[in-house]
Length: 151
Image 1 (cartoon, rainbow, N blue to C red):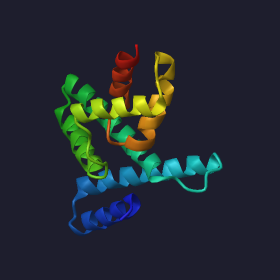
Image 2 (tube, rainbow, N blue to C red):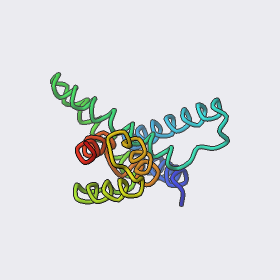
Image 3 (cartoon, rainbow, N blue to C red):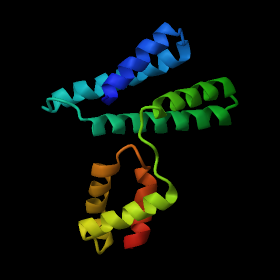
């Protein structure tokens, strides 16, 4: 079942079960996906791939984690809890996150595949990783690990 089908099924189930918070989060996901599809049409792309959709979901998770952190610092715990709940719903549709050891081995494999020898080849390594592991790892952290490896 594709990501879109899973999302539609979850949306229908949330409606039937009258889960207002979950339904709200699922609608936010749908809106973000539709925004991405509209932007893709403007760029001349016929259809948005699942890897693009996973990137959108990953971005949504990061945004909500940052918002939750800011709300907690500001003492708005009820809003922080809402953001954390939305993160949990979004993460249901993301693939399993790679562990630290898995990320290290994946980076080694990507460096070898790209034939990277210096920090100048970092873009090639990131391209290999994004092609294979979108939604499964934090690319900001991976970038730092790649710099350490190549630098």
